[in-house]
Length: 392
Image (cartoon, rainbow, N blue to C red; front, side):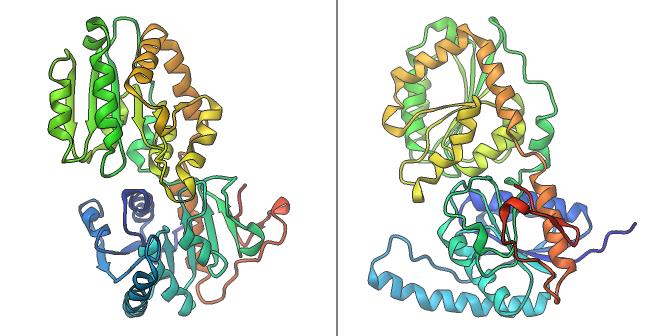
């Protein structure tokens, strides 16, 4: 049976945490024959090279967070301007559905779509519903969550809720179907160090310091790819200079799938994309949640993974060179412990998140104009409604 295709708009911007799930959904929708357009902000345009083969538009946006009274007042005209810009674009595109990926850059487009009676869906990447999604969730047709126990999510107030997981790219999903790289006593131990899209200073300091204290025999077994902030990279290079290990330093990792494929262990923050990519690929991690994340959402993101045994959690003040050196030495002595953690990580992954979210988007596009999404009054009695299944 031939699939009915539509034109879908993705509203995403800001950081990689919002952009990468949108990219994964884009790939799935294009594979299904849909047309896709991205509406983003100035920061989102930095990722435009990844969004190949589609039209990309920028609209004005602004945030209220972290601003005083005057800052909030000056943000209002930008937000209003962004909504009118988005309305003009949506009139021209005439999409079947608009999908927002949270954060203030998605607000103008979703708000415009709601006002134009275009089917809308929000996707939340984190284990705490973001503030923009929190504000809009009661007005859209569907809300897609990455975690079943998403904090601040008021299921009963939403028209439709589905737990899809956080979409990751196909190349990462495929890694989870491969064997975990052999890790024996005399084998190379490969570590991937990431700190979000901009790197993290704590890893630039702690990781090389910890490795420099390891015995030479342990150092020679290591291969490291580490993401650093541009202002830190030369200092990190100097810290590694006296070690006997193979190190690749970069300010941006543009091929995460390949890095995950060969890595045995990930060291990084606990952003939603990091956690979802690790679990989809079946890679364990040493995770240090960013302590200033809004609503402490990174700590919530990693809770399920740590409980399952797929990661080791350290708070910012606990993560130092001595602590990291000890855990790396333990892993070297007990490689089976790392392999087991990889298995635990893979078991809780949601590799079909992009497919599940695409199914939801297609259903929304099919009911354009007649709003057949059914209000759910009891989350313990979720049923299939017109071909769309709500998941818990």
